[in-house]
Image (cartoon, rainbow, N blue to C red; front, side):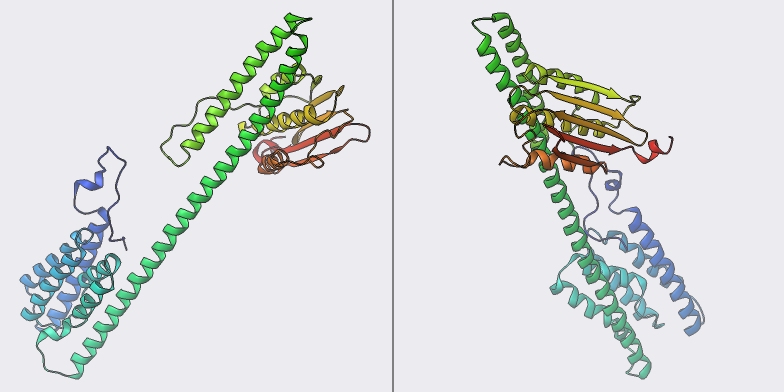
Length: 397
């Protein structure tokens, strides 16, 4: 049965079609259904008790049910009107119909929309309707009164149960919304860490190289400063995007950003930036290249970005790095290897936030992949991410 609270509203500035009438389509269906049930009951009981079916009684029964169209906007007034019409029917044609469908629906609406101080008196009045026939006390009247009380108790219980269920649904919906916001903020924090850690580290190294070559090789210093300016502009642009998302994360009407996220195609740029920052880096592609989902491409990019950032920080001077992207039949694999003598990846031995490793593992886990980090057999460190192909793509191979 529809909730008797406020009717659905549209977005600000628009007029929903349902607001053109004071009732909804569901209200109309309920009213028509109640009218049909009450007409059938009144017709059968009138024919059985009086031997004929009064037309006026049928009209009043229909009017009583049609009053349910206003039950959302004025539930208490609707119940009062339905009870008044029902009382008139009982006084004019005491056929003993009992608690009809219109009264049940109107009382249910009051229970859903009003508090105990309102629906309890309304329920008592509804339960006492069989007494309005004016018949003397008898076993038949007693049974009608018991049946009416049982029906009223059932309606009240149904309304209270629905109210409790609706509150739980709303609380669960709010909890899911808050959890989604928290997850989004954590994702943004990881993105901010990746951006800041990579770009700032690269900018710091390039600024140092520019300073060292400023006197003896100004042209090299100039090229480093130009690259440094570009990196700063890129970092600022990406951080602005994320801050816009963070600022509007609760606004469902926010338009999605149109700037593309980095992916596989940006790995060469990432390797070039790493080499320009003082870490000679090679890039190798194995297997037949194929397009990957945007989210998977972003994951590969972030894994390589974080691994190279940590290599520049901890591998030590003279280290070299190599990025190998392998397109397999059932997975895409990326390896970031270095030959440094320092702490290399620095994930386990260097104190810090740990966001780098956690972020990489979470990104890879989103695609049901695995991430392996550790020292190589010889000098250096390795980071390996394995991302299985989507099921629909793997099935074609």
